[in-house]
Amino acid sequence: MQNNNMPTQQSGLTDQELAFDLLYQEKSLMANISSEVVEGSQSGLRNVMNDMFMQMGQDQLQIFQVMNSQGWYQLKPAQPQDIQAAKQKYQNMLN
Image 1 (cartoon, helix red, strand yellow):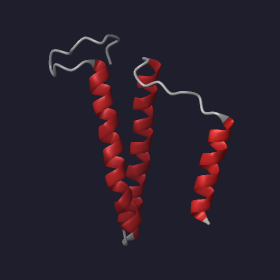
Image 2 (tube, rainbow, N blue to C red; image 1 turned 180 degrees about the vertical axis):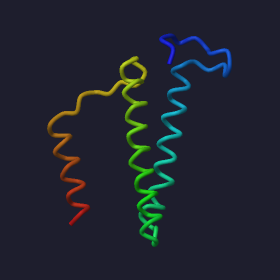
Image 3 (cartoon, helix red, strand yellow; image 1 turned 45 degrees about the horizontal axis):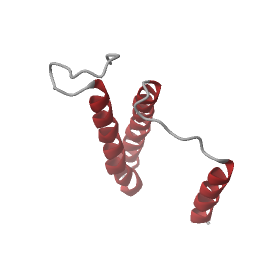
Image 4 (cartoon, rainbow, N blue to C red; image 1 turned 90 degrees about the vertical axis):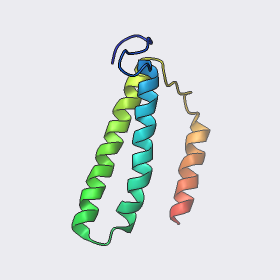
């Protein structure tokens, strides 16, 4: 990615806009493939889909990290009580 926020000649979009588009495409792909992983009845195909899902997660993380390093996707630090509440919420879902 270029280190500027000027539109590229090919797309007319800035690097930041391209990165957001790519990030949301990866998120959408992950949402779509997750049902295939869960509902797959043939173990070989299910394993392939699961591997693809995991790779997409890594790709999405790399895109996010680039965006975060450029200041395009900022997060507020999580408070300890928010972390504990989220942990409890998901633990309750498993029970």
